[in-house]
Image 1 (spheres, rainbow, N blue to C red):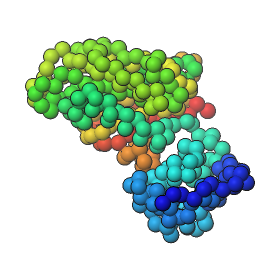
Image 2 (tube, rainbow, N blue to C red):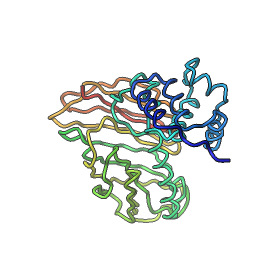
Image 3 (cartoon, one colour):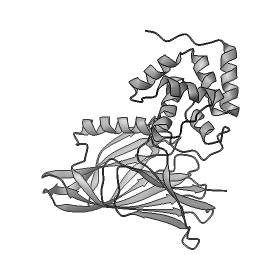
Image 4 (tube, rainbow, N blue to C red):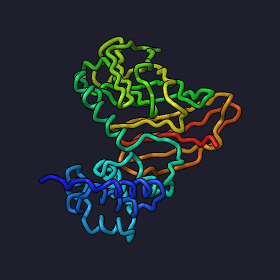
Length: 312
């Protein structure tokens, strides 16, 4: 069964106005009308993406009788942006009360999903298991922000333990900020490792680098290594985050700012998944003397953890 054809230009004009000015329910109603989809077809498209929302809920959302608030509902809104062919985060911004999009640029749900799919494909091509063959005992990361506010680079120290015999490598993943140029990024081995195969994916903003150990590990054996990432290819940075596919040990993140610019405030945030809303917001003190801010997670869980900041 094919979807109904899109509506005339007048419907598109109404949609553009609604996306710009809101409110959410008006924009959603205009988007559904512009695509010419009955609510049953919208529900069908959501179900194909693994998102279950009733027709009644969709009707309430577009009437303004209810607003999506739960994690599953917000995941549905992000999926609706794709189904209705809307700009990324356009409906989500209206839910947060910022129709003009004045919030700091962050990685969208769609970009995170794309990056995860690309990473799985590259790991399969490298013959690396999903768990990487190691368990992370500790990961200490130091990030440098330049005078213009861009992400200059990062340095990571990993302590890992082999899950099985024969583990001899680690795959380092760097996900650049929106607008980055992976072809201009580079990874520098610093201690107890050397560079193997390198994959760059421009659309996903990914630099995926195989780091080879000095020797093969036995099951249960630990290993420590360091490497650096050179970036500086995107615009002004407003956050730095790390995604964890599985539970692990301690994660410490330190962000150091240039002497020419210091943010006015910083905060910690977490997400249980790319589709989930941000939670666990906690204001973090900035050291003016050392021009840095940090967080420490004693035991990481699957999901995303990071530091965000405001320049003004």
